[in-house]
Length: 480
Ligand code: GLU
Image 1 (cartoon, helix red, strand yellow):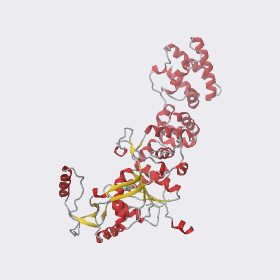
Image 2 (cartoon, helix red, strand yellow):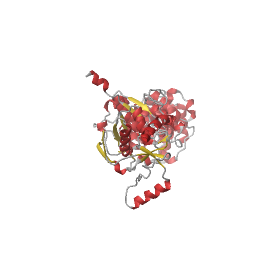
Image 3 (cartoon, protein in one colour):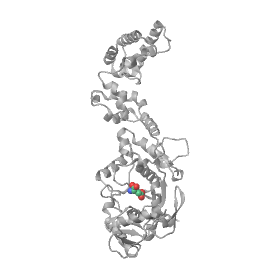
């Protein structure tokens, strides 16, 4: 029994981004699912930079990927920044390893050099299409013993079967593929080949990736068979869809994790939201910490159908996280979105400003718009905004004069006391004017607009407390 346990294969997952752009939200979701699965199985994770496309890969994107994963709270056991026994972890540095396996396939006649020209291949492709056939390489160079050219892998026609952990049994007819190109030359292997070699060399036990790779898996399995490698377990995650059900990968707008980061989404909220893109806990529960996700996530509960990326849901979840955040931490996060002159305010005042504004925040960047009323010297607004219901100009003026009088003599300047004073004033005003006594809008609306210059804002007492007596009275005078 003990012996058996020791033989159990270690759970090892890979995060294989291509650094041809900033970390994509879809890739981040895939990496998160890999991470959760690895963590709950006490497994190891490998960050592997798939930079075989030399023209499109850039160092700045490698850095962006590392930075944003760290920001999300996702770490790895081995990678370009953490030594491990299966390195190097950038494919551009592994050419010798790939070369060895390419030579093996060539010498065993499982692969061959092909020097058909692109014109020739294109003509054949068009001919096949015009005859209603699926285009594939016709095998012209298979038995020619060329000594240079691109390297093609021989694919025989057969049924390739595998058990996908999400999709169940998958069967594929390899006869549709034709001999695929696995390297541009002996020094320049391509995606299908390097991924198979790396998954083997790095002892990857589970490949969890997007459904867009499902049709690649038969090619990878055939390569594994030819190279004598073990086959990892496969799980293909549902595609991410836009609200109109189009593919998210084709979306023009925000798709980089750094876009969401900059806009002021919290990493915990983004993780929570991404976890629900295709995974469903089977309960009503919607809010999950990373720790809870690690405990509760399961591949069995990942759906097959595409997962709609619903920005409103993200905003909703982010808003919940924002409101739960302790004031000092939230204030610190908001600072970079506040105007420069926030430095004139004490930490305590800033915390109050954030505190009274946070119910309206969907993301941190909203703080700019929501709180500019506190930082501006002169408010600019339409006179009509001061008007509540059918009020006449003269009444508005009277209401504001009353507020001015009552507030001028206020002793204790805090929201609670100001509320008490102004409620009494409102009642008095309504009785005098014959307005419904309970409707405080006749005084509080003009006052709130005088203090904020906005249609929507925190209540007048909270604003007044934060502005202080002098500024409050000054704003009422401005309105008058
Ligand atoms: N580098 C590939 C990508 O970004 C990963 C493919 C794989 O998971 O095999 O799509």
